[in-house]
Amino acid sequence: MIPGVGAPVAELSDRELLALHVAGDDHAFAELFRRHKDRMWAVALRTVRDPELAADCVQDGFIAAFRRADSFRGEAAVTTWLHRIIVNACLDRLRRRKPTTELPEYELADRHDHHASTDVRLDIQEALARLPEGQRAALVLVDMHAVPVAEAAVILGVAEGTIKSRCARGRAALAQHLGLTPGVRPVHED
Amino acid sequence: MDESAHTPEHDRPTSAPAEQETLPTVARRYVADEPEIEDAGPEPHLDAEVEASVQALLAEASDPGPMPDAVADRISAALLDAARLRVDPGPLVIGAPGVSMASMGAVDPGQDSTGHTGGSVLAMPSRAERPKPIYLVAAVAAAAAVVAVGASALHVTKRPNGAAVVGDRFTSGSTSPTPPPSTSGGLHIQLSTTAYDATNLAAEARQLLEHPGRPIRDLAAEAPSIGPIATPIGLESCLEAIGALDASSPAPEAVSADLATYDGRPAVVVVVTRSGASTAWALERSCSTGSPGVLKGATPVP
Image (spheres, rainbow over the protein chains, first blue to last red):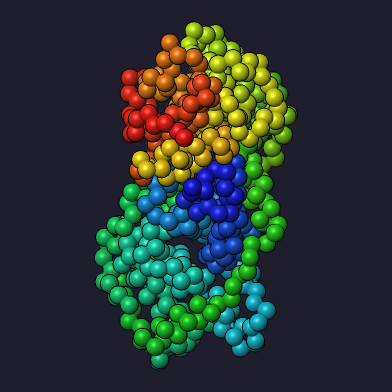
């Protein structure tokens, strides 16, 4: 017998959990949140680069997913669906906060970095922050979280070609900022 | 890497249009407002080695680590509030004495139509603090239903946990605050992922009788994929449709319904026990009077 309502929620798949949630189970969505909160947090934080804002975005996203779970038709993975909701909540929040030229001062923590790599890391973060939203979101998903291009396209609601194009443009901008492009001086605006 | 030339049509999703229709508004709006200016102009050519270096640097960028406990707690609290609203909608009349939008927690001044809460955790009154006129209406309706179907072989009234009553086993006044997770005897409705088919129907039906899951929650019938079959009244209608409530036969001792799948499609498996013998049917979830949607007819349960 396949595990059903009586089975521990930890044994159920994401789809089964979402189905149970839609049917009224009071614990299924909590398990989905437990499973995916760290990854969604990482994506949100890398997208908005501000922990307070990231927390708001993740909360927006999970609440939206909770309320609209019955609209999930199973045409994509639950994680893809969640990613999409969270990422778009981030982009939505960023747009509401515009216009601004201020960069958040938050630095991603990594206790294992040595000084040189810290410099590079901060440069990358700074360069990422200066990218257009769409390029940054594409790079966060594809290059930082190893999300396949096709899935990133679903998450961001654009064609695969657009994801490839945005990644290429974003990488070129980062390369220029970091001085990796032959004949092009690093960009240091500060 | 596919260096696809950028064209305007790249901004139109091609891989998941149907899924877009299912997304919350917050997601759809971003898609609709997709800025194209950032993709304008010729795509830059980047040396493959340099591009690989950038990709490597991004991949090695620091991991933000797990979600901080404070954030997780905050979101959990917000989800709990959302769950309370879902299970117990509370009063529907805004402006009634002691009832305000804020006290309901349903709307906060910063909340927009997309469900944004502005990142705040809404202060929710406890369930005990909230008036429950819906329950009063439901109680009256349930009492009326018992009277209305008094001549029926199956007397059904709803209990707080969504389980129900068959025949005269329970009275309509049953108000047990902590009913058992599953009723042995009586009416039991549950949701599961059991994959029934013609070969296992009888055996799985026996499993359903011996190891029932948790009864389905109240209001589950609101879910489009569930419908009235998840309610005692809806199930009674279905039982009448398949002839399981023959007036010339004694009332069933127990009825169990499992919202699961049959041959891979959504279905409800109903097991009726009468005079110690159980019979199972596999039916479409739309089963109701005049339209039973029988997928597998009466099957004796060993």
